[in-house]
Length: 124
Image (cartoon, rainbow, N blue to C red; front, side, top):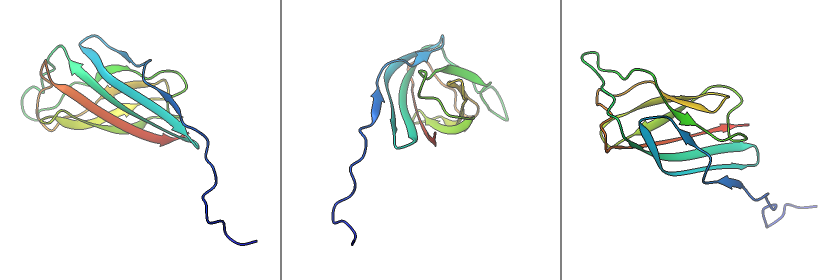
């Protein structure tokens, strides 16, 4: 038998657009998580309601929990994701419980009215 000219059919992705639970100080603008063929990814836009100061030199945010992913869309261990606001950007941890924690910033505050855009992916 030779190689097929057509790729094999793939399962349809499981997609959710609800179920992210923000913590106090944030509201959800939009959210999507998807799983397909053993890979999970998410994209999330959160509005900052309460300013979080990066302080003074060496300018960094306190570790800040921003919310929790829905069950079934969490990683098997802690993974790192990236976030940005257009000014501030940095690292976030996504735990196996689905909790997302912002851990660093490039020295900018997260100001009320900013939108935090965060995304990540992992192999299940």
